[in-house]
Image (cartoon, rainbow, N blue to C red; front, side, top):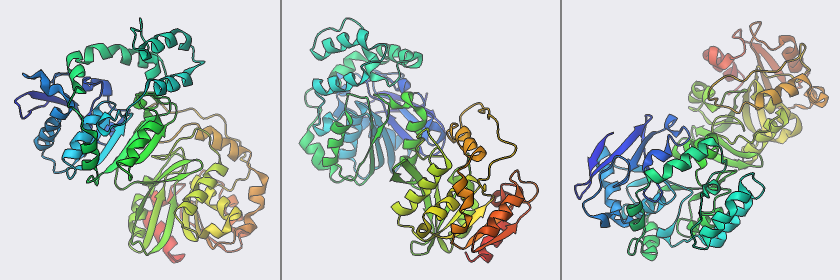
Length: 503
């Protein structure tokens, strides 16, 4: 493991996972070795994780002076790590008790922090305490789980300040499965008990001074809590908004104190979105939608909508070309990319995603370019809400005529996916048995439309695409013999076609 030397001469170690911009990760515990953070639910696929072992934990040395375990005394360790890494500014992620160290660092060095993510944080440094009653309230949310009756008396004993006489860690995990149990079993050997005792000892925190100093913090701040966590409850953590009013507060459904274990994908998408300055989000009734925007702010808006199983990145080249003269928005529909994965999907749902996106960003009258499933979402929206769409480009969009032959059950590929697999069988059902009103209403699509077909290599019936275009009041059909992925296989011809259409 790489090491560096703190100001008092203590050798400190850290692990590095992934590549890209460094994200310094501060463990909680208090004073638990960083190994328990793992790869933070696969976040190392998006950022280089620098996972610090605090002094006296993991591979870091025990300091000569045990008093330096106190939280405020370790602020200098984080600054030494920043200097060691050669960074002018840092992005910080801190978990649980580690959030106090991160807040103290941000208060001491507000100009050095660019982004600060606090995950299920304890907030003693800001004077925000968690009560036994709040922990009890959260624990009672678990009533009815198979382990509850056995574990509850132990947890109650702990809340009364008594020895529990057994384990109660199940309350700290959203899913008390084998992985969670192994994670909990590792805790005793990963925590330095003496250091943990001194971490929040007298003199460690001066909340009024910290709150005042944090007023100078201009960093982007995310506070992520777990729906089932008692330390702190989401409403308690939201009290930090009095100190950092611009902070974003999110609650991960079904998660407790270790959200990257409870739902790695949800955790990873949330953090990757927050940490990527090029990605923005908008809230809709179906969840958060992630998107990118490029091009002059005053230019005419164009919205790019991907196909099934893809995401906004499939439009990278097209967006770059169009952004010279347009304000280009590329969105991830629900269940795709960095947007929320609600678990239930339909073409009507994707239509509603697009409508909510256009309304939320005040993009009424924009040109919408949709590929495949995204194209169907676009024409369904134009049919139902014509005031939202100025012009349409439909690239290889399904016509929502019942499939013949019908699609059978699809088999999920192995490994991690960039989309939520349940959307495949759900949308296949819609393709097999679409609402008859959809294809009966082509004539209601009054927006000027360019319908791009992929020719004989496409798996979509080309005669149905032509028939759909013929029934739209103001549509023209262009065929580019590139099969289904026209804008990816023949980008120059695709761009030429849409420019001739007037973009």
